[in-house]
Length: 67
Image (tube, rainbow, N blue to C red; front, side):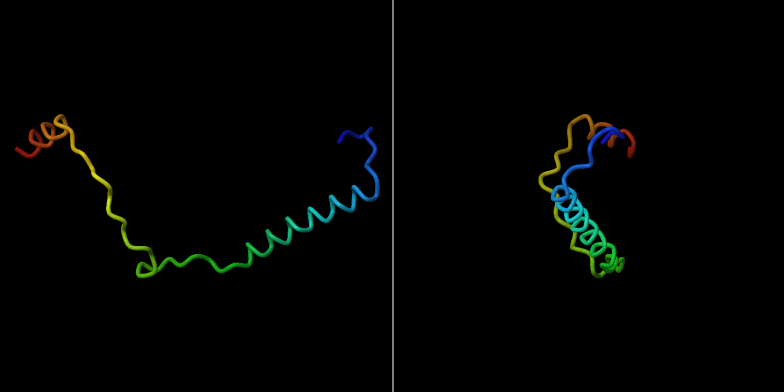
């Protein structure tokens, strides 16, 4: 909004204020949630990887390193 624009009708202003209030209430509710746990036993189990393929070039490099 530029300084020369009309601010809008009272109904438009009320609707905008209600929308901002909802956003701020949602943000306040999220801010008051407890922090996620950092305990190891509460983490999800490791998910197995799907089909990791090792290329021939990677095999040759590994063989050269470990020989």
